[in-house]
Length: 278
Image (cartoon, rainbow, N blue to C red; front, side, top):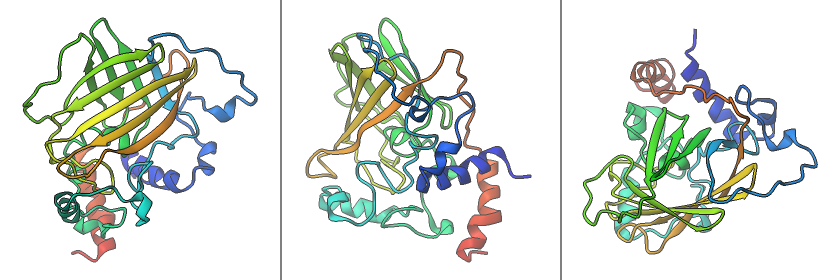
């Protein structure tokens, strides 16, 4: 019998190319914008982004199979990040299953395929599903459904480290710039991670800005900007006002883990035969 994770993986790919059909599916117990015809917005609370958030448009809308939503890897000049020569060289060593460098499954060198942590910001630029935001006196915690990961964003006024030891998830600090907009800066990401599913690279100089804007009571928008002077000639937007919807109280986030044994099973059963590898 196919595993739940395998089913979810295949389902995710289908949803990435069929957002209209996705309206017929949903996370168990979730609500989406299409459930509320002629909805009148309720004002947003101040300095509050807490809650459980699901992509607002449809189940699976956060899946960005072909690269970061605002910069898909489709070969169009306007969707090509402003690589430096070093950045382009690094990109060409990455063999993804999607995008302009896409290869057959057996030849992919995506670290996620061996269950290495996808890290940040890829957690938001690859398979951005349900997330829960928890606010405390000195931190904002983000809990992600995909692979059951979490991040801590410090809000106690500390500065980012000047020469950080690389981490999968980096070092993050955040502050409110107005009553409904929370801005996060993150540095120190391990350069073994990719930015997105299309294999966009980053160096140890990467700095990421997240901008969380509480549009109204029920909607939170996220914008992500990539700033890496070693690999890109200028900052670029990878996610632009991606909309999520507040979920009802008691909504339970589903379990979705990366299992090395199930990954090996998938490669043996489908990936390797599909590519001609024996």
